[in-house]
Image 1 (cartoon, rainbow, N blue to C red):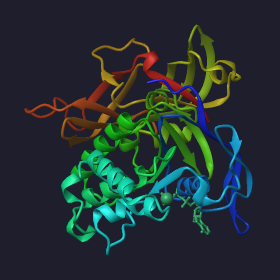
Image 2 (cartoon, rainbow, N blue to C red):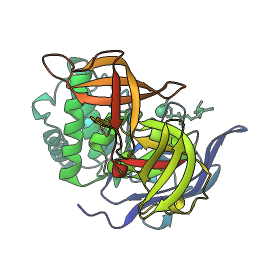
Image 3 (spheres, protein in one colour):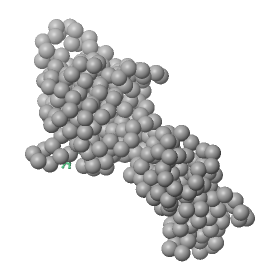
Image 4 (cartoon, rainbow, N blue to C red):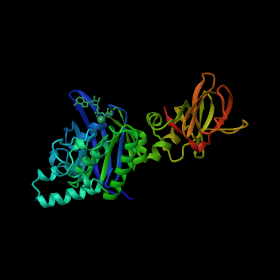
Length: 365
Ligand SMILES: Nc1ncnc2c1ncn2[C@@H]1O[C@H](COP(=O)(O)OP(=O)(O)OP(=O)(O)O)[C@@H](O)[C@H]1O
Ligand SMILES: [Mg+2]
């Protein structure tokens, strides 16, 4: 799928509640037709970004543009957006069909046209047979689908979803993730989806915007964020990671060394100007994923590490091995496929480890 043009852009958008700043000069471009996920810890400003875009809150500074036109001060009911909230906000005394058609009936659309579009929207979320039920007679997942149909019926340019699946149990949540994604592919409407669940973000998003403390730290594909985090926060927040502090050494080709308490490590810096150009001796972290670490039989390899198995944690498909290394026993995590016969490793045993330089990356400290 190609997403060429920008649908919505935020330029230097700031927000304060009273004297307390909560967003600090956010720049963000949402591409037409993409599924963009906003990910960040509690209180990082995700809901605030959505509320500003939706027009539920005024900006303190900056502008929001839609198709190049400034909509910063456009009233909420004129913005071609729709919001789906975590708690669905359905009208309990209205049937499913009336809930879904509500947006059209307040606009006084002809009754026939409303009926046609309600049927279309309910078919899209596979709830045709439920049209005459009341919200209390539906499951959580079905209520969420009603809320989605209600948002879709006005054919918005952008759907804003604020943790819409947070109230669902894990199984239903997974089903709804696939369902939402398939609907988005089908109708090609732009989705801006807030979550603090990184697995949800990885599985659904074309791109992810990572927020922390009112700032956007990184915007990229799930793959970019996982393999090329641009800062310590993203490297720690996004997926499990080993981060070893050290001082940058020389660059050789697309690789750069870093001197750490557990020895000199070599990591890829290809296509990362900030790391190619950083001064020798600068503080940084070597970052490598638990699945990139593997056992080696003899020493002498690059990125050679020695340690002791401190703990083995069975996690279903894989087993997480914690390894104490170096004098200060810096713990590293390694993820191995589980085996029915139990792990070949035992707590306390000495172990030799390595990771390939292209599996490692550096982030500035
Ligand atoms: N109406 C308000 N008045 C004052 N402060 C607010 C208001 N709404 C949000 N805040 C503050 O703004 C910051 C960002 O809140 P926001 O709701 O955007 O976070 P969030 O990332 O959505 O968090 P969560 O994951 O918990 O939903 C928080 O520190 C919050 O306390
Ligand atoms: Mg929130």
